[in-house]
Length: 488
Image 1 (cartoon, rainbow, N blue to C red):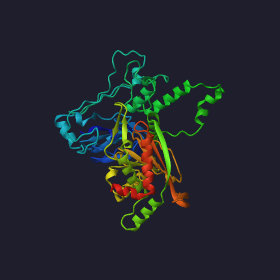
Image 2 (image 1 turned 180 degrees about the horizontal axis):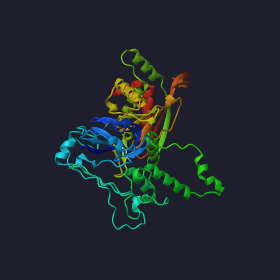
Image 3 (image 1 turned 45 degrees about the horizontal axis):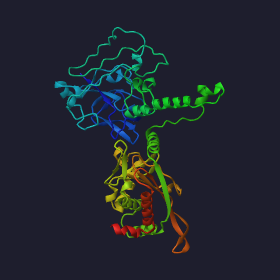
Image 4 (image 1 turned 120 degrees about the vertical axis):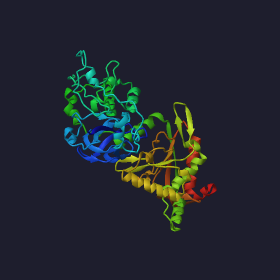
C-alpha cells in the first residue's frame, strides 16, 4: 500500500524564513524521482529550485504560483512505496481535499522506516536528514485559532472521520469542520491562546512596534500571520494615530482608496532591499565624506596592463585592489558592531561586496577573500558573479558574508552619491563616473580624467580622521598607482 509523505518548504539557510512560489515544475499525478526539482521559489536572496527528497506520485500541491509560504509550510504530498494509482485524482492542486495518512519518515521506526528509506533521498536538505534518521518530535496540527475563539461551548471535540494508514506511519487526523467566525473576529490566539505565526522576523517586527499579534488577521494558510499582515496592521495604526483634517466622507470609500494608485508588494528582492536599507538607516549613525581625484594615471596604468597581453584587467578590479590595501591600513572600516555586547568586531579577512543592478533589482554579490586575490582573479570573479546576477542564479552564499562594499554608481552616468551602508558592514566606498574635466596639474591648467569618490561610514567604529585618512589614501592610489608598489 502506498504511503503518503508530506514535503514541507525546507529551511533554505542564511536566516531565510519564507519564499514565494515562482513556478511549479510538477503537477498532481506526476511521478517524481528522488531529489528531482519540484518547484522554483524566490527568496529574499535568490531564486532556487527545491528538490523533493521522496520518490513517488504527487498527490497534492499547496499554494499557487505567486503565493508566499513560510518555512515549514507544506509544499506537496507524495505517495511512495506503491503504484500510487488513483491518488492524483483524490486531491486537487490546492491540497484542500483530504489526502491519505500523512507520514513522517523521521518519526517512523521498524520495518515501516526501512520501506520509507528506500524511497528517501540520501542528500541533506535543512530539516530533512539522510535515510533512517533518529526519531524526532512530531509536529502536532492544531485547529485554526479562529475556531478556538468561537463563543459556542463544546463539551467534547467532534470525532473526525477515521483515516487508515499502514503500520509504522504517523497519521494526522482531519480536524472537525470549523464553525463560522464573525468577520470582525481576529484570528490571533485570544487571551493566552497560541498566535499563528512562524517567522521570528514577523514576531520581532510586531514586538518592536508594540503590536499585539492576537489582534492581527492572518492571510496565510490556516490563518497564518505573514509579514505583509503585520505591515498592513502597523500602517493602519499609524493612520489612526496621525491627526486627520476633516475630509468628505466619500474619500474614505474603498473604491476611491483602491483607485488612488498602483500598489506593488514589497517582497522578494525588492522587499529584502527595503528591509535592509531601512535597518541600516535606523541602526547605523552614518556619515559621508568625499573627494575629487585625478584618475588619469590609473586609466593609463590599466591601458598599459591590457596592452601587455594576457587576460584583460577591469577598472573595478583595480579599485578593489586599492580598497583592500586601504583597509589593511585602516582596519577599523573592515568591521561590524555587536550591539548586544556593545563591542566593535574587527574582521580578519576582506570579503568585498559590489553593487550590481539586475532585472530583479539591486543585489550585492560578495567576492570572498578579496585581499588574497590578484587583479586578474578579481576581474574573473567580478565577471562570474555579475553574469550569475543577470541570470538570477546567484546562491545565498554568493550574497552574504560581505565585510565592505564597493559601489561603482558611475556606470549610471552620475558623479556622486551618499551610499547607504550595507548592514551590518561599517562602510561603503562609492565611485562616480570618470570624465574629462579642467584640473590643475603640475601648476598648469589641463584637461584630466577626474572621478569623485565618496565614503559612507559607521561613526561608531571610527571618527572622521580615520575615515578621511582612508579616503585620502584611496585617492592617492587613484592619482598615483605607484603608491601601491610599496605594499607589493
